[in-house]
Image 1 (cartoon, rainbow, N blue to C red):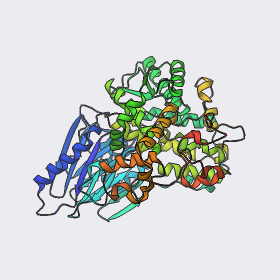
Image 2 (image 1 turned 120 degrees about the vertical axis):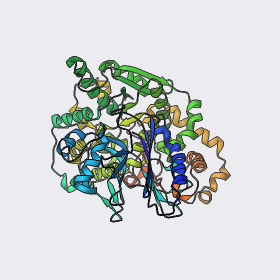
Image 3 (image 1 turned 60 degrees about the vertical axis):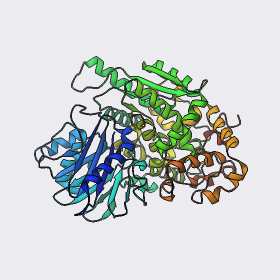
Image 4 (image 1 turned 180 degrees about the vertical axis):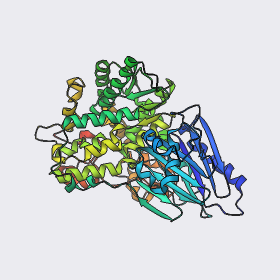
Length: 557
């Protein structure tokens, strides 16, 4: 992954030399995403800046990528996993200039126009400047794994950037570019290009997915996302999701060694990474999983004070004041720094599984299959605001790319087509049982059937408890009583939330940035709608999984 910054709608009389300088200065705010190289394109209609993290074709593939005639200029943050299949169909009519997986976007656009994004399987946010037509096409991947923001300056020029911080002080109307949408300035319209039948519960009723089909589909997703020319690893918390990713990756890494296939520069020794406080449940479970899978494992420990010290930088990088996200982002941010120090540039991660399969513990309270399914759709729609933002920005703070095989579009179609009645938990059935059953024998039983632990819980229960105590000591009752006056938009409901919001305001002043963060009550990462599933949720709402009494084993701890 990388970062992009673009300015469009330039007019005669604009000072291009000064605008270029400003664009470079603002792009430096997100250079942590792309420390390997910087590229700039300037013409009378557009300025594009790209900060590169070289994962595929590290020796070439510099951006912005220009077509052979110079008419198409592309800046991309992302990975296109099906680029080879697409290139086979397009190579006769487009002269590829690089070995980058992303250049296929130029070729597709030339053949099909802005609607070409429908054919991409990958994670991406891009701006494509068509010099001949004088228009820009902006698009973001269907789930929003890659961040993207846009806004306008006082002269009405359109700005886009990978991170919000690059637009602060320039644009007054900053907002997140919506996932699964494409904007074409030729028409001036923002259109949704990604809409699946499985969003409607009725389309899934009665649909079964055989365990072997589910397993094969996920294995294929992991295999696709191991596309890299640099050292990679896996995040391994010892929970079900990260362990399944690691199990599949370990299998393909071993196969590379056995076949001695040098056709692709994949790195065969699989390294796994975990982090937690001393005594962390995740660290202990990760050791078991790693030993079983044969990974070269690295379990790192951090202290509460180290986590607390990192909070201001975590909030600046992740660009949120959401309590759940900050709790989980901090250990991930610290882990990213360790991973970067070891020379690894890409990791596979387990985000998305809980949203697809209803893995959060509050799903035990879902009253029926319809509400269960509708909540999974709501959770998938919100991933770009929560777990995807956490994983992407926490890792990219150190120039480490996080890929998420559970959100592979082909696998998503398989998993979400299933009738939710087969996913439901409760009455003695553990969450994500259908996924566990599909991978019988792939992991030690203690890992395969381990209860869901949210990352912020699994790193050590003392982490959340300590954060609450710290906020209680540093936010006075008087300050908190006036919270709605200081923060009328999404006023913090707890002192912990107030503490984070105060830090956020220092980096992102004004209402525009604050409006990019969702509000509303949550129980163990639920959407606000799911609060109605259990009367007890209304009085005990907290993002921690331990808030689900009667389900989490440590709910009363």
